[in-house]
Each structure stands twice: as C-alpha cells, then as structure tokens.
Length: 123
Length: 298
Length: 141
Image (cartoon, rainbow over all chains, first blue to last red; front, side, top):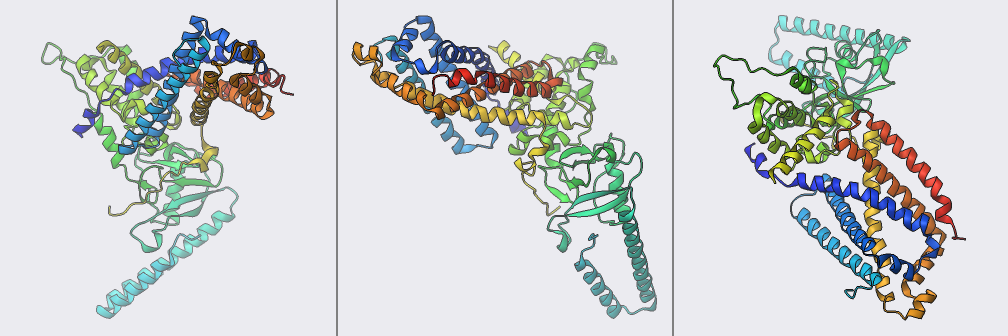
C-alpha cells in the first residue's frame, strides 16, 4: 500500500482557502444584502444609482473582491461536491476545466459590468 | 415463522434415500430413524416455543436480515421474524442468541466478549449502527430491525466482509514508531500525564467499523481512509514520544487525497461510536495540524 | 468466501427519517450552496445589461429608460421575482449561519453542541426571513 503516500496533494491549501473566503463572504454578503435591500429598496434601482456607488474606489474594489471570492468559493464548493459523489478520471478533468472556464467568464463579465458603472473605459 | 426453506427438506430426504440404497446396514437405518425423530422433536419444540413466545405478553419482535450464498433458497436476501421473550437488561445480542439457539441454528452473526470490548458485533439496528451487545432492547421501538452494517459486502446473514476496513486501518500504520529514543538502553519511553490525557479517547477504538459504516463520504469514496483509521492516526500523531519527524510522516499519510480533507463534518461517526470517541473533533484537529505544518513549510 | 452480497447505498434518502442533525446540516448546506452558485451566475448575467446601458445618452439615463434600469424595474415588478428573492434571502441566510457553525467546527469550538447550533441556525434563518418579508415585498403591488 506504499502508493497511497505518493498521492500527496494540495488539498489542504484549497481547504484553507475555502474557509478564508467563507469568513470574508459572510461579512460582505451580509453587507451586500443590507445595502441593496434595506438601505436602498428593490423597486428604486436605477443605472445612475448603481453607477454612483461603483464610482467610489473602495466600493468598486470591494465588489471586485466579492466577485472573486464568491466565484472561487462557489465553484470550488461545486467541484468538491462532485468529487464527493465519486467523480474521477477523465470526467473529473473535464469538469474541472469546464468549471475553471465558467469562472473566468463570470469574473470577466462581472468586472466589465463594474467598469461600465464606474466609467472605466475597459468594457 | 418461515425460518426453514422448503427446498432444504427435499434435499435431506433425497440424501436419506441415497444413503439407504448404497449402504443398507441396520445400524445406519437405526441411526437415521433416530436422527429423524430428533429432528421432528426439535421442530415440534421450536414450533411450540414460537407459539408460546408469540402469544406471551412480554415478547419482542425481531426482524432479522437473512442471506446465505451457499444455500440455493437463501440467496435472495429476506427478513425473518423472531419472537423473543423479553428479560430485563436484554440486549440485541442476547435476543439474537436466543433466536439462534431456539429457532434457527443457521442464523449467523459475529460476537465474542459480549461486553463491548472485542468490537465484533456492530450491526445496523433500527436504522443506526449499534454494538449489539451494548444496545438495550428496552430502548428500541418494535419491531426491531437487525441488519448487517451498510456499505460493506454481506458474507452471510449479519456478517459483513471487514477486509476493506482493516486495509484502511493498516494504511495509517497503527503502531508506535519513534526515532527519538531515550539515552539509556533500558530507559522507559515515558509519556506525560497531559499527553496521555490528550490521546486517551482515541485509544478506545475497538475496530468495530460502526463509524466507517455510518460515514456518507466513505460510502461514496471507497478509498477514503474513514473515521476509525484517521482516529488511529491521531492517536499516534498526537503522541509526543514519536517525535517531530514521525509526526510529519503521519500528517502526510492523513493529508493525501482520500484523507482528512474528505471529511464533511456530518458527525455521523461521532454519533454512532459505541466508545464515545469524539471522531469528528480528532479529524478536525488533524486538519488544523496539517494546515499549520503546511504554512510552516512555506 | 466466493460470494458476497452488496446492498449498495441502503442509507439513501429513503431513510431520511433516521438522519441525524449533522447530516441534515450537510444536506441543507449543499443544497443552498448549489442555489447560491446558480444565482451568482444569473445575477451577473442580469447585471451585465449595464454594459450596453452605459453607452446611452445622459438624458435617457436620467429618465431611467436605459436597458439596465428597465430590466431591473420590469423584473422587480413581478411578484414572483419578489417571492423568489425572499427565498434567496432564506437560502443565503441559512448558508451563512450554518457556514459560521462549520467555521466554528473547523476551529474545534463547540463540537459537543453541533446539533443545537444547527437547530439554532434553522430557527434564526426562519426568524430573519419572516422579519424581512415586508421590506422585500414593499412596492411590488
């Protein structure tokens, strides 16, 4: 059973990252819900108000970080769930890269949206 | 009560005629007759016993999983019902032994010490993993469903194949290792009281496999080390006498792909452990140890 | 031993009545996680209507006639969307509360009361959701 030891993987780092992003997300998601449903109300959304918020650098960077951590936490969670269902071999590699591509698309699209509001030319 | 399979009686009578035609000695015939009468008497007694038990007020109803790959009529798994007279303090194991001794001697299950030390009689009782000798009948709702441990191959009746479980246990090298020996050749390797206290609960494992059977992750991933093996690794990794170097080796074993990171903290193992070992807590502590040692490594 | 019998996953959902607190917590956490990931993708898709909207005239933006504002306003006018939002809040709150519970478990805190903390997150989720209904439904009629 010596081959068991050779499959050492970076599972620990991903585990830790999942927890660190979790701690961050709990706070930011609570803030997000509070700001956009209780401070501002759902029926008074407009492009200019969203743009107004996003033009502040601290809000813009917080939202980008929110997007990055949420995507990582969510996609890594899905990947772990699938592995626990017994996903192995080629299927696993395919799923892994599909998820990575989906994450990249999501992040690019999210940042483009944020840029549109912030008035940054890149979108 | 349908503990006997009709096919079996046919076979035995065929065998009897064979014996008569090939060896028609008087002694054999007499012995055959005697055996037949004994069997009749036994059946009568069993039927009587069963009737009495079913009619009696204080009996418990047991539904027991049956499977025997070696007898044609028993290859299809089924449940047999046994009525057992209740006695104060009766355990599931007691009831099974009564059923075997009174109704059906082919009923098969493992047991040895009957006092929760040998770990042979972990079973699936009313939907949860229990040690049969440590589970009071009075605490269960009737009918009591007794099945072999889930997520393991059934060999016969309540007996499951434990080979895979033992493989996982051996994979964590469940024995003391050290390269930090005391100076004197005959010196003892002393453990501090605090350190003993730390590993105390983890040493209680009796290898009954109840935790492994309850684990939803182990069910899906056959290579997952499982709670018992990780607990075993904890017992030695936390033993200060083994030294840093061995501890690192142990952390690498439990950190592999099918090691601690697979645990989803469902607490199923901790709930079913008959020795009350805080398995989840131990697995979590090993995760933190592994993270710490990785961070140190950076 | 030539033959043995594999009973497969007999501890399946068919036995849900026998699941313990920790198991339920895991199932709910996984379910809410899937919902939240699904929402994240939808959310960004809807919000990215802001990209074409950014090219609109200042006057159009002032009047709120741009694609983004119109999309959101139309969606928020639907009662179904409002109800789904309450559901989303419930899902998110549970995932956050149970996530906090899991973080504590990972830190080795309060493992003996893990079942109670699960029930507490359920009750709290219910309370927060009910308390938020007026705010979430406001202006939908």
